[in-house]
Image (cartoon, rainbow over all chains, first blue to last red; front, side, top):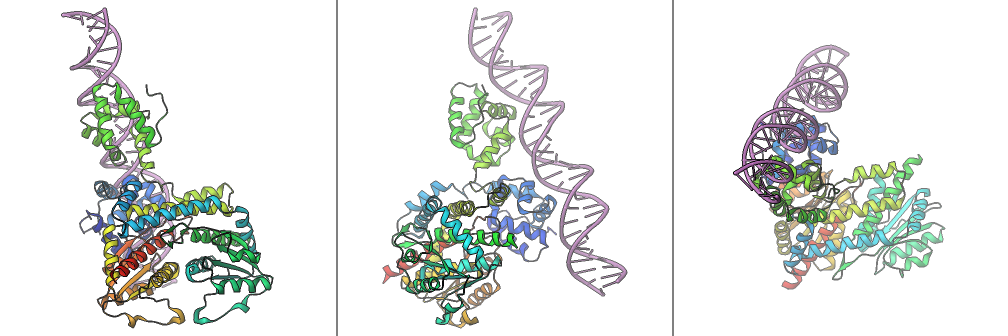
Amino acid sequence: MPQKTAPDSFDAFQARLVEVTENSPKRLRQCADYVARNADKIAVSTVAEMSRAAGVQPSAFMRFCQLMGYSGYSQMQKMFRENYDRRWPDYTTRLEKLRASGDESPTALLAEFVEAGRSSLEMLAGSLDARSLETAVDKLCAASLIHLIGLSRAFPVAAYLSYTLEKMDVPAILHDRGGNLDHRHAIGPGDVLVAISFAPYTEETLELARFARDRNCDVVAITDALNSPLHGLGAIALTVSEADVGSFRALSAPLTLAISLAVAVGSRRNEQK
Amino acid sequence: MPQKTAPDSFDAFQARLVEVTENSPKRLRQCADYVARNADKIAVSTVAEMSRAAGVQPSAFMRFCQLMGYSGYSQMQKMFRENYDRRWPDYTTRLEKLRASGDESPTALLAEFVEAGRSSLEMLAGSLDARSLETAVDKLCAASLIHLIGLSRAFPVAAYLSYTLEKMDVPAILHDRGGNLDHRHAIGPGDVLVAISFAPYTEETLELARFARDRNCDVVAITDALNSPLHGLGAIALTVSEADVGSFRALSAPLTLAISLAVAVGSRRNEQK
DNA sequence: CATTTTCTGGAATATATATTCCATTTTGAC
DNA sequence: GTCAAAATGGAATATATATTCCAGAAAATG
């Protein structure tokens, strides 16, 4: 099986990995998938550690190494140790370099956004009100149907919530205005609306939130500032601010909040069943 | 002398190293000097290799380790391997621990996702290939029309790209499969496709990428692992991996990459006008 | 459904590597 | 220069780790 010559560069390794993944039995593919995500760990880990992390037996991992064209784990690891040098420089120096390379370059820009994202996440962890989060989870667990709305810049957050909830078998509907169709009358008693909006606040989102409130449905708001109009509706507000680069903002913090919310709700609901 | 507790951080290690160097016999100092210059090699080398490189016997190197406060080379190496990469103790096991300890509160979960997001961003800055990013920006600046596709979990990223590009007056179309309508024949010569997909890779995304390639359009791929099928298409690949919590992943890193890309393209195009 | 082939897990073994030990050499003090 | 103390190198041993092997399970084939 391991007729081909062993990949001796990172690129060759990558190419072979793609081939291998295509049609391989379950365990081998598990190895390939794990390795694809964690290739850098090979240099400093034992087969035992790698196989455990990949969720397979050491012997299965050995077979994977052979499939990749190596005589065994040791030979594969050797390749990584030899190429290990400057491939993954440490974060701080890398970031400085990225920034130094001129304001307008894409890498400098990336460095800025990475920094902004990191500090936004820090703020999120530090300042989100734990009690509001608890309440939001409680309400969403009790809901018969969860409605989601988020337009313009907030749309990716709403879409991701929709994806995650569906994956966890939690009934949820995304009001995405596709075809300019309205589904507001699907909002019934016992339902909860999650409304997501950042400045400048989309009127349609606010309006749906008002509609839900008038029908005595709870509203959970994911928004960006204390003066957001969503606060005025008596919504359970989760406030999350995102640092900006120039006038642009990534969505790291709101998305992280969203997935935490979804997973918390999903796992609690599935336990109750 | 080696009664002190073993240094468990790089700084502590360094401090101890200085002490040790001061008044030590010849061979031990040789070890200290070599290690001072090549500390990073410890994680991936054996005692034999280290001692040979330092010009001493393995046994001398062992004595050096003990002088440093460790029980032996293995313990010292362990410290370096653990600090080698900050995302180590992987999140799956941490979540298991968290669950085992009964702390299943949404706040704890949020903390996990925040941590995962922060380290993903760190990885993004540390490992993204600057040249690929440059090439991607060049191609996208030259494109007459930019096509975007990303389905399932990748959809929020595609949607956000679409939003940002439009805001910056860059002509772009999101192939979102709404109404199950296809728009592939809108892809013309001189256009570029940005295909976004994460495991498990969506067949429709791959297919559109193949279609674009067959029409001689460049494809920029935002994907998550080395074995992504998008690599096989000769696409300009931007690989970004996201740490997971349990089996869930937020999108902080891919989204940050996406907005950097969009802003870089947008501002360069607007300059050129 | 029976039969062959492939795949899998775990235990047994081989190998590499770390670690200790001790005879010999060097160093420093008187 | 002699003696004691410290340092050194290399061989012997212990330990960790990789690797192989095989019996049983699962899939594929006819």
